[in-house]
Length: 168
Image (cartoon, rainbow, N blue to C red; front, side, top):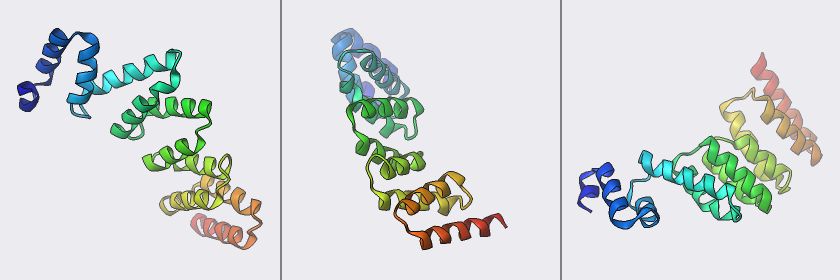
């Protein structure tokens, strides 16, 4: 406890591993170390990788979710969650995760437009991308797909007009 209060994390790790043994120390350290501590992140990542290689792959979901919460946009965590949610049919969880992380709104929008059939949510995400990057071709194509699927031709014409204004 004193090592933790003093911020002497390496000493705390050494003592916990010596006193508790590897398995108990692992669990205790994941709770004790600050979320952004490199050792905690490395341990989470190792636990997630081991889970992906094991029989009960879905049990590694919370590990990868924790890692992504600590490190938004972490490519390895996003890739693992895509894979795991894809296997379990967790399209909604994946779309929500990607939208919340802020790093993959286009991918989240595509899931909402496709697998979840929620065009309004998809449009909101695509429009958010266009607010930051009015010439984003992927967002424009996504909006085109959603609006043409719903036969919203006037809205689609407005998107193309706005894109043309940006290009000129």
